[in-house]
Image (cartoon, rainbow, N blue to C red; front, side, top):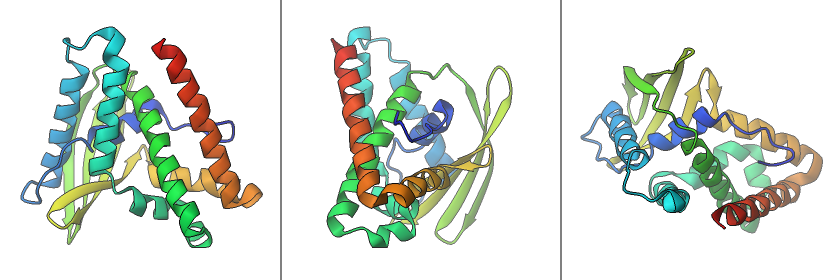
Length: 210
């Protein structure tokens, strides 16, 4: 997606999106939260009533709604930037949250379009105070892929704050990529990199839509 950034595997991005698509009260277990989210998104994937020419726009709209309502992006942004978050001005922090959100929206859109009906098995759940981990396995044609969802209870609702697929954390992955850019170009350099990538992606989507 970006010149300096190594994109996450499509499946990595997809599974993160799947578990963030429904608002569930804490009375529902973390596993039920993940499963209900996956089931709801799969209904969109399998909706044959959406015209093929409108499918991408419909998915993009759905992804944006999911991310805005169910993803604690400011908190995750702080984790991704780590110590660099405190070095950024308030304005830079706001811009990063905005650009990072848009970046994942585009990543998820591409990931969704590559989904091919993999089976998801729920194999474990751990809860400690306001934190939980749900372990799953994605059964693909070639191999089984372990995926763990990390959740935090905020108020009366669970939120996913990280996904670990084959021992690769989304937060750590982005943290390492962005830290390298900040080390060379500063926070403003990272923001420019993200903004440039988003503009290129937006141009590409516009051409595709035509």
